[in-house]
Length: 112
Length: 109
Image (cartoon, rainbow over all chains, first blue to last red; front, side, top):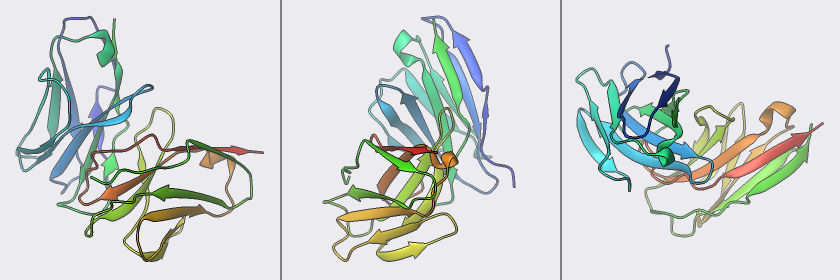
């Protein structure tokens, strides 16, 4: 079956702009979570959605937001981009609870 | 949330068995322990999950003592392609809120 798909794979944005990243989970998975990975901070949890509702949120400023659609696809948005937002953004999907999370290849965001 | 402690890095040679131990002293009663592998610029990949005693799959074994305050990932006969970062994650649910720094395994020829 198809894995988790993230688009775009690479993105370059300018400071102050906003960006929207997309994640299509594995068919049948209703939980989608987002992570930011940087060399200095490692993998950091952003938020998790289940059935269109945000269930958990990490310690990120309000510039980071997300949503999930009825087909379980999810988007995350970052407004007023800063240089420090340059990172690999990873999305993972899983069945209800427990078990393994399947990660996408990520979106590499570069803010210049 | 259970905090984990893993070695920052480990070196090994091809064909050897590698054991990576993770400490999770305040693991919750209903937490499972999940291990992930990550290659550069890729998302983490599930390796194995367990609750107690020993779990084995085609890739690795996971040993969890009775007190569950630690777990050991065992990779038999590693190859160069096993060079990666390995994360130990206690918790429930598919998502994991705290990945930690992981263990960087470097396999040499």
